[in-house]
Image (cartoon, rainbow, N blue to C red; front, side, top):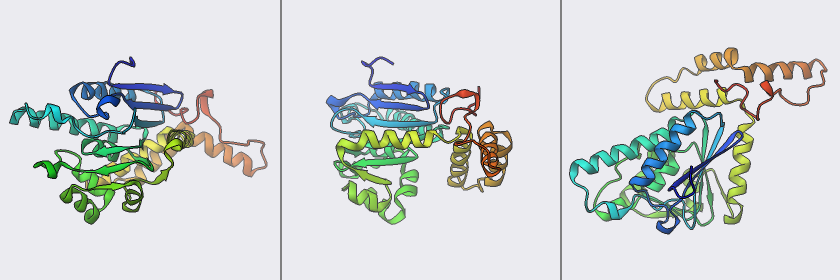
Length: 271
């Protein structure tokens, strides 16, 4: 993607990087960014990457949906736009890759929902999370169920119904993020986490994500069936089990094999 676009996607081996590129507007979500994110999701779905880092350029992760677009929206258009953004955040949640939000500065409204749509979240000390929609006279139009899942029923309703923002420390206590790091260390820590995850076979990670999605949807998840399929059909699992057995027998393998000589974690990627 061109750097002039509102979103850039760079795939570097087993790790992909999605960057929101509207720093002058604190990466507010507008129609142009929606189209760019839709293209990025299509590219990611076809990518052999194992992990994805989502970040914002400039002083914020994402300050939410662009308020400048809202006054001109009619009812039907507003509903269509809401469904479009819902599909985008759901699209991130459905990716086979493990996705990581690297959050600094504001993650408000739609920006907070975009962060919550990722599998994992790392916050810089400067991060601020919130859903200010009720202070403007309307409700968040997408992502509420997932937000309550991540933040917990009581704390999630607190943020939803008060419109208040929380700092990185409180976000950690609420479970909105899994770790807090200094601002200057955010990119490095997110990159390290992505690289560590990308060493795992992709099939197992994708299977675990499918089980979680099934459970969220009120189904059993069939963890046993997913486990059996990944165990028997995933080349990555078979290679690593063989390497483990070789070590147990006194073999010389020092690390799990990487099938096909590919990048870490990509050996069982469907072709």
